[in-house]
Length: 583
Image (cartoon, rainbow, N blue to C red; front, top):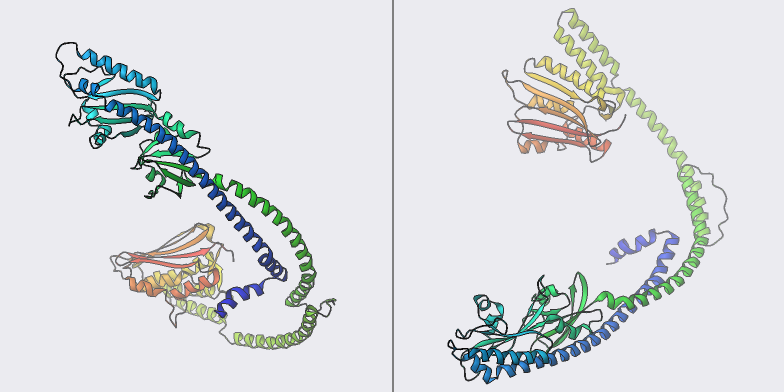
């Protein structure tokens, strides 16, 4: 633990400048606590506002529930009065012949429903579905149970309602507004079978008006015990599932609150349950809740920043007084680094920085003496190195010897030996390159051509070599003997016959601001394990394939180097990536 503390905390702090240390400590003891104070003030304010809004929303939903229950109770009373109307039951269950007695039914039901419509202007329409085949239907107050009605969701729920009221919403369409449907199956004690369906149709806006005045920036929903939305501001959401819309399953407790996401923003939801199992759900976006908390936090931040600004100015002045002498000392150190040991005398005082300056002066004098000693020894080492270089083979001796062999071959009229010796002399003249390891691509191509000329004489008729070199790359640099090892490897290891000579193609072009040199042959190719071993470092390899790759990476960077692609029986391609860098 102590080692981790030193590595990740203590040492990084020590590496900071003096001024940075002061600012860092200031941040820890002043700014950070101030920011924490602002944060906790913000969170506390938001929490208090949330609790207050929760109480207000619960009161609001309770009032909505009360209004809604009163309204639904009135609807249930009028439906019960019609449900228990024995005269209406007799009219709907009687058998009718061709006589006009059914007109009494129309007259009674018309008067009855007109009275209901006058007493309850909320109703958009009131009618009965009757399956009595002998009773003619006027399609206004008395409507037939057609197949479309039998297969409707309303009819399916009514068959399982046991005479209770069923509530259903229908969303808004182009032809009609959103409607709220109340229905109950007509089946009293005297008739043990249903003889009709009583239906009240109310505009959904009437139901929503009971809670609209309580909205106050909230989105309010009424949903049934199955989570289906019965009333909402957005009429397109009617009959949708509210738990799916909010991605939240409501608990079985009658009231509560939870966090959710609504319309893509984080929101706060409160719900309350009616006695019939419906729930009133209010959703309030957190953006509105935290608006006041944010305003208070911004005020605290502005005041805090004012004090922090004054403190920063004082810290800056104090740090500058101390750091000025430190910067002067650093400037003196850098002069010594450049080899200038004649530093100007400065007044540093006698505190810790002054003592450091005195020790530095003593060290400078001693360092000057040591450098003089090391420089003298280095001169002696250079002289020894020059003596060693002079002891090496003189390249001119090699050129002269090869020239003598060429003259002797010409004297005996042996042109093959003469050509090979001349190409060999050109090869070594370029490859020795006055001891330099870097040459131009143009020189590397000439060196490769000299080597290839020797191989073409040696393997006459069994070897073909072609070139495709972009002249734009010729002035750029490469390491010496970049291509020759790969051509040598192809000539030695590729297998070909007299009938099928080996073809080698040498290419050079630019690619994505780099230079690509390629050596492509149609020999037998290599197995994967052989291919992997080519670029391995092995003792004793001189200008070999792995040596080329290593020298390129050392000279130009790890991004550059050699890539080899080979398939057994098809051939081998070597790609050498180089930068566009002049010699």
